[in-house]
Amino acid sequence: MYMCCNVKTYFIMGSVNCVRDPLVVLEEALAAGITMFQLREKGDGAKTGEQYVAFAKACQHLCARYAVPFIVNDDVALAVALDADGVHVGQDDASIQAYRRAHPQKIVGVSVHNVAEFERAIDDGANYVGIGPIFETTSKLDAKPPSIAFLREARRAYPNFPIVAIGGITTENCSVVRAAGADGVAVIRDIAMNENVAQTVEKFNMSSIG
Image (cartoon, rainbow, N blue to C red; front, side, top):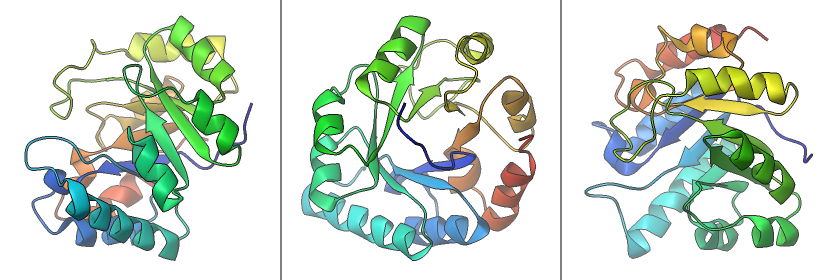
């Protein structure tokens, strides 16, 4: 198993997820103590082309300033071009095998929904897996059914492999998710749309049980 970083409070964001300047929101989250950041630039109004690359570079620069890993969602080519800290892919996205062979020191995350996918992610060289949606979410319309039961099952099957839970996680329910076996919680809306980012991130960090 490849070494992993601190997935405790994992902020995921794209420019379309914020009502305020997304770079301001990101820096507030970084200053408040998020442990990882993933750029997920998807949805109506998402940046493309040169604007996308420029936005990604700006996010990467902020993450570097705070020594927080910068992960790119579902865009291996961009991750390679920017020398990002890693990449996160889903089951319908690009295979991680070639990326892993070429970049053995990078962080690789894979979304999984069953034990077979979990096992394949480990075999392919993942550092961590993402499990969800745990609760209902509006950020991914094609998301599979809620899976807190699978989170518990996965933790029993793989007691030491890093698991990140995602999907509808808030400061009110994150302790339940961590208790079910998640090493980290991935959050979009509850941080990106929040007027008090610092307080929210602090609550997520305080919810850690390990």
